[in-house]
Length: 96
Image 1 (cartoon, rainbow, N blue to C red):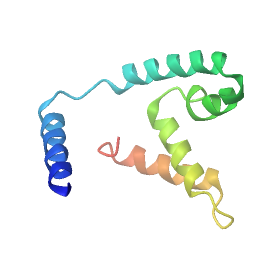
Image 2 (image 1 turned 135 degrees about the vertical axis):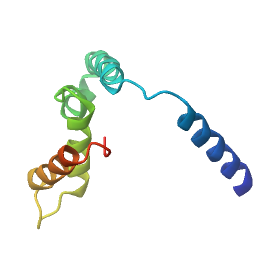
Image 3 (image 1 turned 90 degrees about the vertical axis):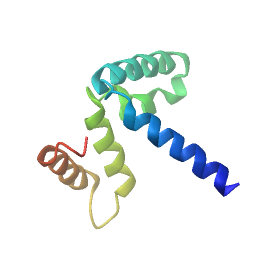
């Protein structure tokens, strides 16, 4: 079973290495459109879609928000963590 997983992983890695870089902004707009549609269909999930997707104009912003939310703790608040993540992403274009 591990061999099968390893082969599939290697095939995926090869495929993604040989394809062109995708336009993240275009993909993000599609994701936002789908999230807006789902937020209308499922009002209970609307606040989640707004907080995690719709309130962010780009993927980078949404990712830093999500990572900071996951890393939040009493010693280090979410917004401080997010500032550090945003600074790191801004300093190193390879991150995203």
